[in-house]
Image 1 (cartoon, rainbow, N blue to C red):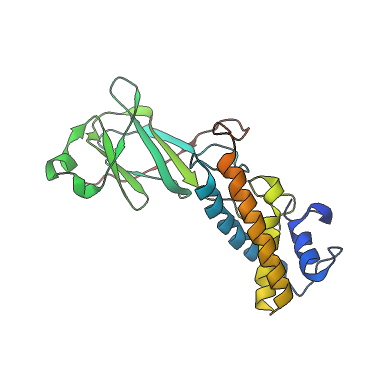
Image 2 (cartoon, rainbow, N blue to C red):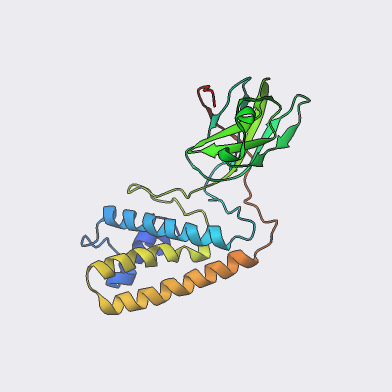
Length: 241
């Protein structure tokens, strides 16, 4: 389903009207577009937790993105940290180029696992630790390399705006009604619509269960059919760790 196209037969906003008021011919002003948009986005975030946990590869990604969740940046000599993309929720893998020009996977560790000497050391990175939204490679690379840092991460979904029309949520379309049902349910709860609440809760649970089953059993090599376009990472200011 699309967010709010002219054709209400394929509209999340229209489906909310049908579920609550019995018709999607026109927007019922009792449930504003601002409230609907916020509630759909809240349910979208709820769907994300289901998708993340159900994906056997832990690699679910919003298919409405124009690129894959892999970012690169140039490796700067003696720079001790790199700031990750704001959208990076979970880091799956960090690779850095060695002096021979090969990208090598770094071992994730906690900062307290390193000695004082290791925190000061320079050379070819073999591990990294995280603080906030930054990654710290160790030893600190003392050489430069174009595209020498690669980050593979998991990001969130792309929220809707009130003016969106044909935008779609980036997961299997057969489960898109999870969003409109969830948004309708929040309205029914707020308005004390008991019968509607019970019905919508059952519908929402049923779709959630079907969604989990689908994403748990889909092909492990399934990938979005998009062209690869890598993004860049912001570099941090050098500090002595």
